[in-house]
Length: 512
Image 1 (tube, rainbow, N blue to C red):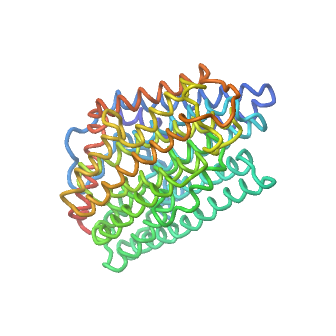
Image 2: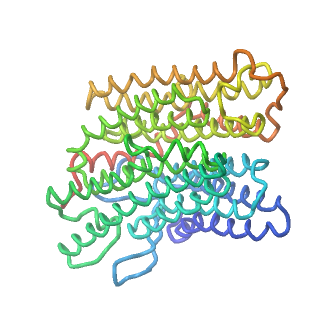
Image 3: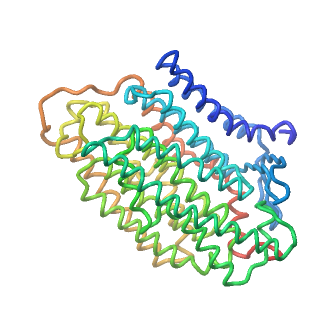
């Protein structure tokens, strides 16, 4: 893949959903079906382009030279040269996998909204696609000013998705409340991160005499111990709110329970991953010494999140809130793997990010389909679905087992690698984290028992999975099976960038 020819693929990845959103908005004037097809084709194009890049990229077999960032594709263009701000995009194996996950879940978000969204269809797809365009920009941006622009740009469309198309209660106030809560938490964390970015750039200027927001340049900024620790904490909080890390998670259950199905899929499957990606891409490499000092505290927060999320899931009566709290628990394992810092644990964290996005995205789609049929999310008003909708019950059972980490599925590979990589670093913390696997089995079986078995709350027949819904579930099942039975292509793709991040984390970036 030639550099000059391939460089334009990166802005194209961002432009496709952005232009697709505008086209979908205008297409509503012609037909309510056109915006759906435009959204579907736009995200399918992202999947196809990401797979093409994977097939043609020269994936490095060994870690690049110590301290030298290496990208499969890189794009640079001047933007605000006076302040050292550029349109700098870069793609490696880590960001490629995240973009592929965004494309897959984007396709599913459009597909699962086919019947649910009937009002302002064009504007809905505009917000959905612009949100995904912002996410892709986050995964590609290597200029910290540009990164922050994308980081903020993906929040406003999500606010509208929840506030305008979310589920109402008490006269519609709850969905606006959930959207506002999400926005305030993420904006406050983003403001803290912006201050840290500006401080890091100013310190770089003090040491070099040059203004630069470029990731490759800021890696080598000399910092005192206090400066590094304070900047690391600000970046960590900014990403921890989005992950979310306990106790910075309160926005998540409300946002999930009130969001439309597509919003829940994007929140759990994609937006949460931007927090983990930020820790991997920015916090560990930019502040390796402070991150090492902070690692025990981060691992304790990971354990708290694993146990807290699992225990809260067990007492939920709303099926969407139950699934939302399982995300807090699963992302605790991701945080544990990140701060273990070795290649094995980092690979496990990335695999778990992918598997969690697929499995939890599927569970939220199933929750949305059930709400369309029963007009309730209360587990007490379900029961007996195994007899009334056997295909639906099969899908729910499969993804509940994936969520608890059944061997042969992607979640098991991710959790196993995280625990195997973390044990040499922190054996007692890893042993405590392993208790989350037991709790996961309990809440998964609790979900299955309450929703699928026992006497039904009413005798009315319900529609089983349609052909469209069956195709979505089958695709996600095959993806989780492939990730669980043959994860090596994924591990090979991310090995070099994760080894480099692990080296920076363990030894620091040269010249620092």
